[in-house]
Every structure is written in structure tokens, then in C-alpha cells.
Amino acid sequence: GIEGTVKIVIDIDENGNVAAARLKKSLHPDADKACLDSWKQARFRPAQQDGEPIGVRNFPRRCRFKSMD
Image (cartoon, rainbow, N blue to C red; front, side, top):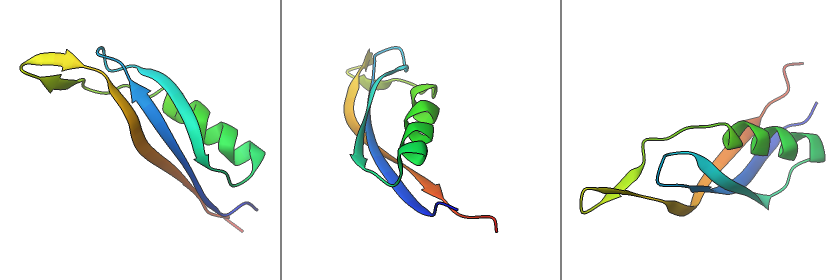
């Protein structure tokens, strides 16, 4: 099986939705896609600046894959 880590960065909009996800460290095409697809569906509490919700760019995330064999 595939083992290792996929590293990505995501942009989160002022509503807490993932606006974009970009690959930073590839593992395998299937693992890369699974990681990106998973984080694209995530929802967050928006960051705030001066009490107002703001977007965040280049927030680092990762997915670890481990064989279950």
C-alpha cells in the first residue's frame, strides 16, 4: 500500500469555507487527490481581525497515509 505524507496549503475565506487547496509535497496521484478532496470539504471558524472575519491564505495541512497490511 501507499505510505507517507501529502502536504498541501489551503486558503480559507471569511465564511470559513476552503476557497482553494494546493499541493506542496506529492506522495502518489491517488493519495494527493484524496488529500486535496478531503480538505476542500472542510469547514472552519473564520479567523478574525479587529472583531471581523477574515480569510486566511497558505494555511498548511497534511494527510498521512499508512498501510493497513
